[in-house]
Image 1 (cartoon, one colour):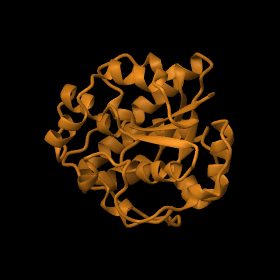
Image 2 (tube, rainbow, N blue to C red):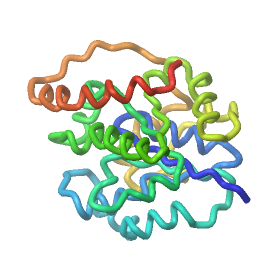
Image 3 (cartoon, helix red, strand yellow):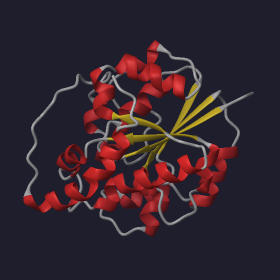
Length: 240
């Protein structure tokens, strides 16, 4: 059976769980939620809720996980892997060249505004925007240019953008991707109770609303550092 293995490299607080739920509605797709999260917590000093639960549920090291994602047997034709870009640290990421990669971006001002409510003292490294740009360049240089998806563009017209995304991923579009049932889902990682409260209330992609956000002075430096990386990637993003 020919399979497609699609790897999402997302910023945090970027509707990545909603996108995972969207792919989970496909009858040809199995999904995996943040398989490198345990490795990340073991190797990078960050303060996240529920660390002990995560480490107990994800015991494999990164190299073992990467091998399973690239070569493990699948029960369906499509594998959708939801990853946080920041988790792609402290190990060899050359395996990404074997996957269809989606760089999932969001304006860092919006990320910081949301992320600061959940995690204390967010850092540029945790947001992963600079690493997204670096991985985009590395993969593009090997003729493996990732698809770039922007969450604001997705919310402006979910059906149109998802249709383009499916085409870019070489999989058929399915209208079932536009909605799901509210509440926790079996594909959730054990960290869902700390991070997924809002998406558990959803049944689809919420309408796009342009908002004016003023970041506190403590977050301005991070925003200015990450803004050029975001803007460079945005020019390649699927547009609504």
